[in-house]
Image (cartoon, rainbow, N blue to C red; front, side):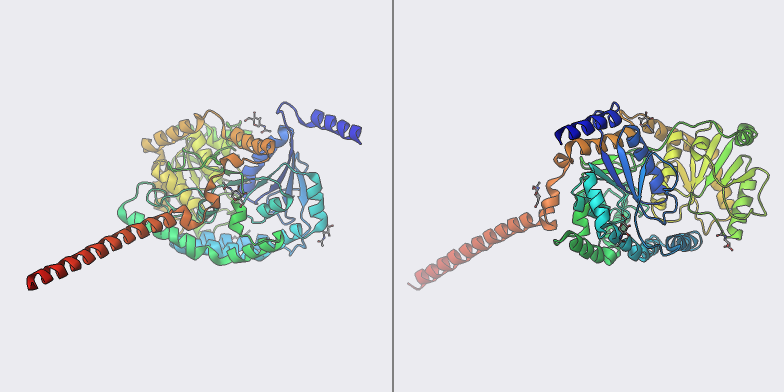
Length: 529
Ligand SMILES: *[C@@H]1O[C@H](CO)[C@@H](O)[C@H](O)[C@H]1NC(C)=O
Ligand SMILES: *[C@@H]1O[C@H](CO)[C@@H](O)[C@H](O)[C@H]1NC(C)=O
Ligand SMILES: *[C@@H]1O[C@H](CO)[C@@H](O)[C@H](O)[C@H]1NC(C)=O
Ligand SMILES: *[C@@H]1O[C@H](CO)[C@@H](O)[C@H](O)[C@H]1NC(C)=O
């Protein structure tokens, strides 16, 4: 018995611990799409360092390719697939995002995003039940004795599984629910006087009216937008854990929050020791381009090239929109590499080439890259920052407005509206190439980004390993988690002190009145005498 354990321990040491000192087992609850691309970089680095990484994956994942051989293990969740539900929903949403959402106000657009997520609630709950109520899966997970879970909180359930397995967990996110999750569940302080609400499109320097807007947006996210599916999840989590709890309380148990931004992007703000800002961890120096692409790029001469991508989600635009964009691009002297899968627009200029896929990072790192037209996803923005390329933002949904607002405030980007833009608007926006301040600001951000004592990927990996080694990071956890909201804001203390003052005033006035009356009476008496 003992010797068997000993042998397996030696084997494990031999197999796993190549240089890093300790190796462990990591369970991952991911989110699909661009979030996965970012998380995958961390996970592959963890396997590289000898850890065993297992990803719980939904069978209808769109880009998490669990059937391909990989250094990661995939555990496919046994869920009765309702056909292409997720893919269809996503397509509907993208139609909306590329046609009407950019004409809406921020509030309406946030509502639409929320509506979309609510439509997924049933699906997400089913996915969650398929794990936590499946005895054989839970038994298998429990017996594996994971050391840490790495979770993308945008898809609920990860934290519930971690609680059930009693495994410490690390979050990785850009922000969630307009920042309310970090603020209320993570206790990240966010004074509305100088910390703009995510999605509000404001900067940290606000006028009085902008501060009014910021406070209202913060109330909007706190009280109006949020409560919809929260109750459902609160109830579900309480049932699954067998004790009264809330989604927020469970989320607040995260040991470390790995945020996908950094001070090159963020406005300076207060943060907590268990928040680590690891934006740009996926960025790498550029590799050589494929031969055909390199020739095209070189053919641009001194004008250079413009890289254009609306991300992995938007594949198709209306014919009208695609023509409008193509005719704007045809008017600039640069060569354009446009990632686009839709029908070839009739107005496509000789200087523009369409590609199903482009090596975006390698193109942005190419010395001929002059500008980046982007939808403003966090990954793309960071590649732009890393390589110091000025940007033209065409935001459509989610964090994109906020990302572009940050880049505008830093003097790196110009924004155009997807819906209302004319050909001339887009063409004029590409003046980020001719106006030197954009390039200078981009280079400044780039040098800030590169000048870090420890690279973001190494910090992300360090904190995950730290949580494995120490079974959590409780010493970084603020005591704010144990306070009620009125204790947190010291309202009880203020109330108490006010009561003291009120009592004192009351007593003093009473005394005064009493002695005045007495004095008055004795005075009267004296007069009468
Ligand atoms: C992991 O990160 C380290 C440090 O950044 C790097 O040297 C190494 O190549 C990375 N490994 C993988 C597989 O990405
Ligand atoms: C539970 O998970 C196993 C796979 O681990 C699967 O074979 C089984 O069908 C699942 N049970 C239910 C009730 O879904
Ligand atoms: C692209 O959009 C057009 C018009 O909006 C539509 O007819 C077509 O089916 C779409 N194609 C794909 C592949 O989504
Ligand atoms: C907070 O409360 C939990 C449980 O109620 C307790 O275990 C923990 O020690 C408390 N933490 C602090 C900082 O008071």
